[in-house]
Length: 420
Image (cartoon, rainbow, N blue to C red; front, side):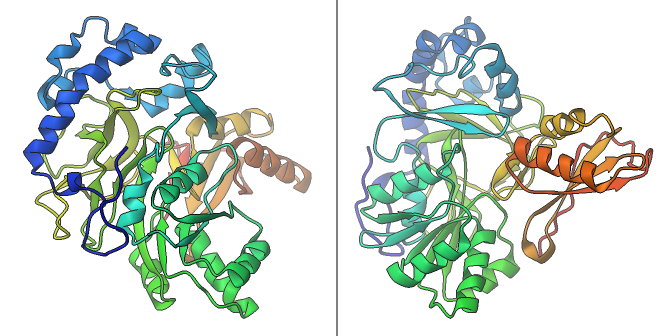
């Protein structure tokens, strides 16, 4: 496991890999890749089939890797239904080698292996200025999904202490800020904004001086608010399946890729990498021995930025999250799938068609489920809202519209959020 060679000094690096010559990094990753592919074929049933005719020793370059099939996150739900619990992607079963199991919306189950900073988050936290001696107020969820544990394991690797705030219970979280005076925050940008506002209302001094935010966009207007509150905020990008994918540095030019994975930008719906600078789907190959993912299509869109970051880190940079390759979207840090919207509608026969609209008034995500219903009443509306919350694990408003009024354009989720 990599360790930090410096602690908390802006302009320094988590380890020497961050300043390697790019060709050295590329050679190292692809020298290790054949063994990972062989491991996946031998121990993960799905890869024994998908890569049956692949010689792992031949996959030593990006061109060779690009010949392998892409397995997309949108396919995992069905694959896991066919072969519980992990669709044949895990290499171990219950026991010492599998520390936890998480459930993301769908549900999609993710196994966690043992090891310090198993998700690679320490690198992003370090770049955001987190260091030994910080008390990290972690508001990512510790329930069902892995985000809370991801951040906690990375913070512990840096020598930080963690307050596991989780989501909600705002009054108790404000009280903890007043009593403990945590120096660092981890969570979604929208919840950080809420905590700042609630502390002001309660007359509590906001003690956060640094933050790592993820799960949502953090537009410039929101970044300015945080700066005015005296908080130095950095963004990171990752998934429940992979862990950290990319992170922001003081240069504020895109996101630098993590060192422990191979990332390709691939044509949405296809397998061919797009030219540098073109928007495509983020496809990741991991070296996780418990949950090896070979050419895993995240469904997220991004693009490669040319050149090297002024911060001195030499790994490839991406522009950040640019949307979804499919209609799946993230709301308050949680994925919402079109199949979930259809599942809500199917439970209520009065609903002829439904469309989930996502907006962000005041830079806070809001879900509105528009339902074509003839003569619906308040009881039905409340019942559908309850179903929406049960299936997506998020609160949303239900709005009835006349039958035939929703556009016939194939959209199940309409993301109308705007960022200035």
